[in-house]
Image (cartoon, rainbow, N blue to C red; front, side, top):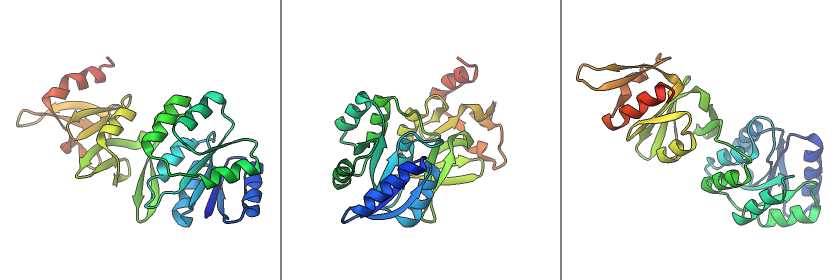
Length: 248
C-alpha cells in the first residue's frame, strides 16, 4: 500500500515517514507540506492511503480530502490531528480514520489497517460537528487526468450540464461531478439560484436587464466570455434575487 504523507510541519512528516518505513506492507509514496501540493502529488503518484493533517495553512485537511475524492480512484484517508475529545467523538461517530498527535507507531499501524474511503457527505458532516471547517474555498475538477483547483472567489456561476455541473469562472469553464443542490447548500451565502439549473455568485452581478422578449437576465461584472446571455432569471426567483442584491 502506497502512503502519501501531508503535514505542514517537517518534523511531523519525518516521523510519519520513519514509521511507514518500519511497517511491513506499506511504502512511502511521497510527502506534501500543504493541501494544494497534496492534490498535485496525488494526481501523479495515485497513493492508496493519504495521511492528512487537518490544520494546515491554505486548504484544511478536510477540504483537501474532499478534493482527493475527485480522483478516479480516490485514496483512503487517515487524518492526523491534535483535536480535543469532542472532535474525536465526531470522527468516531462517522467512522472516519484518524490518529492523534504525537503519533504512536501502534496507533498509526491500526489506522492504516482500517483506512476507508470517505464520502464527501461524511466530510461535510464531520466538519459541521467539529467546527473544523467552513465551506470550501475551492472546487475541484479533473482535467486531463489531473485535479485542478478553481477558487470559489473566481467563479461566476454554476450551471447544470446533464449529469455534471459546469463551472464558469474567470479563466474559462470546466465540468465537476457534483450536484447543483449540494453546491447551493454549501455556498448559500455567496451564490443564489436564478432558475432550476443555475446558481450565480451574488458579488459578480453588475445589474439586471430586460430582454426583448420580456424576460430578465443578469449582466455580470466581468462578462468577457459573454456568459450573461445564458443567465435568464425565472419569475419565481426574481424577487429573492432582487432582495439579495439590495443587501436584504
